[in-house]
Image 1 (cartoon, rainbow, N blue to C red):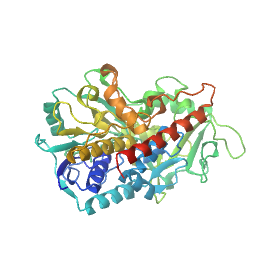
Image 2 (cartoon, rainbow, N blue to C red):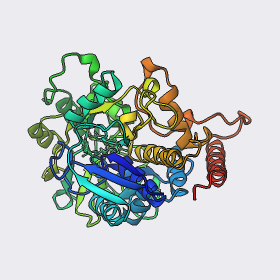
Image 3 (cartoon, helix red, strand yellow):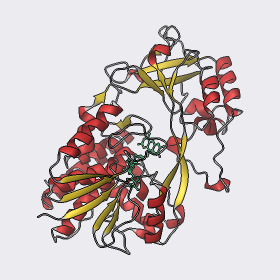
Image 4 (cartoon, rainbow, N blue to C red):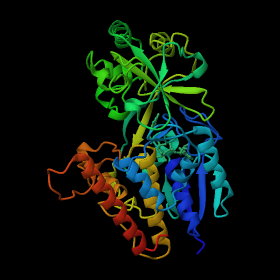
Amino acid sequence: MKKTVNIIGAGLSGCEAAWQLANRGINVNLYEMKSVKKNPVQNLDYFAELVCSNSLRSNDLKNAVGTLKRELELFNSLIIQSANECAIPGGQSLTVDRESFSKTITKKIKNHPNINVIKKEVVSIDRECINIIASGPLTSPLLQQEITNIIGKEYFYFFDAVAPIIKLESINMNICFKKNRYDKGETKDYINCPMNKEQYELFYNELIKAETIDLHLDDETNLKFFEGCMPVEAMAKRGFKTLLYGPLKPAGISNKDGSKNYAIVQLRQDNAKDSLYNLVGFQTNLKFNEQKRIFRLIPGLENAEFIRYGVMHKNNFINSPILLNEYNQLKSNQNIFFVGQITGVEGYVESTSSGLIAALNVYQLLSEKKMVSFPKTTVMGSLQSYIINTNVDDFQPMKANWGIVENLHIDKKIKKEIKKELYSNRAINDLQHFIKLNKFN
Ligand SMILES: Cc1cc2nc3c(=O)[nH]c(=O)nc-3n(C[C@H](O)[C@H](O)[C@H](O)COP(=O)(O)OP(=O)(O)OC[C@H]3O[C@@H](n4cnc5c(N)ncnc54)[C@H](O)[C@@H]3O)c2cc1C
C-alpha cells in the first residue's frame, strides 16, 4: 500500500505518528518549520525537542506515566525507544540527554525510506488530503489562523513556564550535596541546596516581591497555569509554606550527619556530560536580572552561572470534546486529525501516545479497516477518552493518572500501592490482547 499522509510538526506526537505510519508502509510528508523559524523556547535544530524538563517522568509501573511508557513500548514507540537509548541517571525517572535524544530521533526519521521531510512553515491545510496536525502548544500564528478557519472556533489559551539551567562548575559543593530523596535509586542523581529557616525567609520574601515579565494579558482570568508547571513565584504567593510542600520540600533529604533542613532546592542533571543542572520545579516568569539576583540567594548557588533563564509562553489547545471523535479525527472533516498537546493531553509522553493512537487509526482508514478505540482500562485509552468526553466547560489539559482510568472494582481495603499494581497489570494485559486482536504488531 503506498498512500500519503501529511503530518504538520516534527515534535513528539508528529514524529511518533510519522514513524508508526511509515513502518506500516504509508508514505509520510513530514512538515517542520524549525529550520526556517524557531519558536521562543526552541534551541535545537533537531526534531522532538524537549523544551523544558529533560525528564519523561517516572518509570515505575505503579505510576500511570510509567505504565503509559510500557504501553507505548508494546507498539515499538520511536520516542520511548530513543529515550531509553539516550537515558542519563535520573533516579526512578526516565531522564535523557536532550540533545542526543532529539538527534537520535531526527536521524531515524530522516533515514526512513517512507518519510519525506519538508522544511517549511505550513500555513494552509489541503482539505482533500489526509492531514495530521501535530503543531503543538506553540503552533505558529499563521497556522493557528488556518486552524481557526477550519474548526470555526476560537482557541482556548493559557501560559506555561520553563525552569532555568545552570553550570555545574558554578555550584558550591562545599554547601550543596548529592543525594536522592529517601535514597531511592542506585546512584545519587540530584544536587541538593539546603536552607535553614532564616535563609528560606530571605529567599521567600524576595521571591514574592520580585519583578515579573509583563504578559500583556487583557483578562487576568485567562492566566491559567497547569498545576504541574506553575511558576515558582506564583506558587510562593499562595502562602509562606506552600513551597515547602512543593519544589522546596525538605522531606527525605537529611544532611550527612542526619540533621534535617528547613527547605531544600533540588538540581537535576540536564545533559549526558553532566555539566548542566536544572532547578527542579523552578519554572518562572521572573525578569532575567531578578532570576539571577534571587536564585543566587539559594545556599550554594551564590555564584551560579545561568545557561538558560526560565521563561513563560503561550500554550494553545483546541476544544477537543466538541471537535474530535475517539480517533482524534475532526468530526467536521474526516481528512483532518489532531494529535499531541494541541488536543489537550499534557506532557511529553502523553503527546507521544496521542500521536500513536491517531497514526494507527489513519492506517486503519487507509487500509479500509474499521478504526479502533483503545481500551479504557489502559492509560492510552483513558487519556484519549478524557479529551473527548470531558465536560466542555471544564476542559483543561490532562496528564496520565490512574484517576481517569476505568475503575477496577476491588476491595476498598486493599492497599493503595497494591491497587496501583493491579491497575498497571490490567492495563498492560488488556493492551497486549488489543494489539493481538487488531494485528498491530
Ligand atoms: C514552554 C513549554 C514547556 C513545557 N514543558 C514540559 C515539560 O517540562 N514536561 C512535559 O512533559 N511537557 C511539557 N510541555 C508540554 C508538552 O508536553 C510539550 O510541549 C510537547 O513537546 C508537546 O508535544 P507536541 O508533539 O504536541 O508538540 P511539539 O513537541 O511542540 O511539536 C510541535 C512541532 O510543530 C512545529 N510547528 C509548529 N507550527 C508549525 C507550522 N505552521 N508548520 C510546520 N511546523 C510547525 C514546531 O516547530 C514543533 O517542532 C511544555 C510545553 C511548553 C509550551
